[in-house]
Amino acid sequence: MKTIPLLSVEEPVITCSTCAACCCRLEVMLITDTGVPERYIDIDDWGGEVMLRLDDGWCAALDRDTMMCTIYDKRPLICREFETGAPECIDERHGITTAYR
Ligand code: SF4
Ligand code: SF4
Image (cartoon, protein in one colour):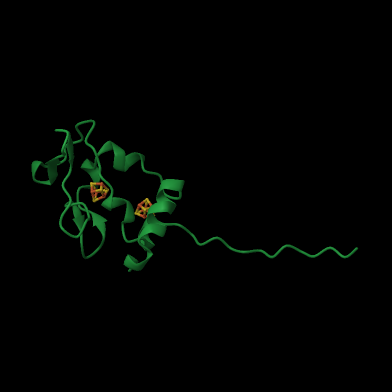
């Protein structure tokens, strides 16, 4: 019996530099104080502090031209723990593929 070699399908490289900051549209709760400036903080329906999002859906602290975080050193804990390439990241990227720059 002939063995058919498996095709090698290369996975696309997942990197934030080629992403439209998809995860920066999620609700980000502030559960520790990392020094986020007041102007970027909103209060959700349950009274908790969250990152403010603008009408376009993205976090107010995101630079719309570069799609980079403008408060990277002070970003919330949840942003620090959001892992590039993790299932949640891939889900977000698939969710708004039309927004890719
Ligand atoms: S963590 Fe994932 S979803 Fe967030 S900017 Fe990076 S590649 Fe995009
Ligand atoms: S604080 Fe920065 S990393 Fe976190 S959601 Fe906003 S722009 Fe993205």
